[in-house]
Amino acid sequence: MRNEEVVRLFKQFADDLYRFAISYVGTKHDAEDIVQEVFLKLLSKHVLFEKKIEKAYLMTMTANQCKDLLKSSARKTNVDLDSSEWQLACYDGFSERNKDVFDELMRLEDTYRAPIFLFYYEGFSYKEISRILKISESAVAMRIKRGKEQLRFRLEEET
Amino acid sequence: MKDTFDKIVMDEEKKEEILRELQETKPVKHRRWVPVVAGLAAAALILTAVPYTRKAIVRAAEEILSAFRTPTHLEYTVTVESDLVTIEVVDADGGLEEPVLAENGRLFFVLDGERTDVTDKCSATEYYRHEIKNDDGTRNVIFIGGTVNDFGWWETTFVDGENGQEIVLSIGKANFQSEWIKKAFAEEGLENAVILLNIDGQKASLDFSLAIGEDQNTETEG
Image (cartoon, rainbow over all chains, first blue to last red; front, side):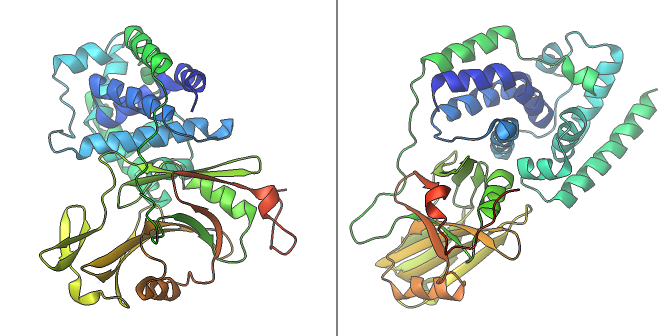
């Protein structure tokens, strides 16, 4: 893909991919690295696709990168919410409520976080999420349901 | 959640750093993972059960075959723009993991670091078959065949199309004159499939407007 095209996609979607990567892998530096890797990979791809599927395609690439990272043996899947890197990275501009929502979401298993993020924040359908995460629609539905239940329970406990 | 995540953005400094890198980096091709050796078929084929439809291929491309990874760590991307289908195959991170290994006079099927001795199941006319059913409804079938001194492998990804059709992506290193692979294709129901694309590198394109003739069963998108 030409540099100009990749730059256009970066300017349009970098923050979207970053948010998704944060929700998936949990740390700022990893999320930044993943976004960088996705767009660098695009430079070596010769794909053409219609604009309507650009974002979903990039989300799929991001999900692949996130899965690779989580598979690596040196990587923990649980987010360390007490780490200074985490707090400095993600709490800028947050209200207390934002912080609560974010912390509790990050406490969920990554298998729940990603579908919940894609559904409630990005507004993707179950079908679209199943394509992005390469899981069945029924798995998407189950993970969203369970994750939402856990999230609701924890947030209600906080208040 | 919207209010919370709206506030999460990348550092501007990091964005500028990445932008500079994207603007300055020359596009680099992945290495050609399959060496084309005289006498060996090292090709990616797209086969579909006859009859095929443009609609089925577009659906498969858009819904499933987007940065699709196989067990051997290849990554397919099939895209459709107007009447042009493009298929790209690259190594996923970590590179291709060939599913076969010959060692100490034995033949092994290798997947995710695990080895299975399949020597006694393979010969010039026999093959070993391994199937993986994926969470997204696709399935991968890997064949290993031949002898310790002359073996090959083939990986096929099946994607459900509509009306009982299947879209198939198939790639590997094998001599198509071998009896084992002819048998494997026949037993898998692929021997009568229509080959839409035959590539010996990383990329191929198919122009629907040329490929769809009057004798093909076609649907037009309405």
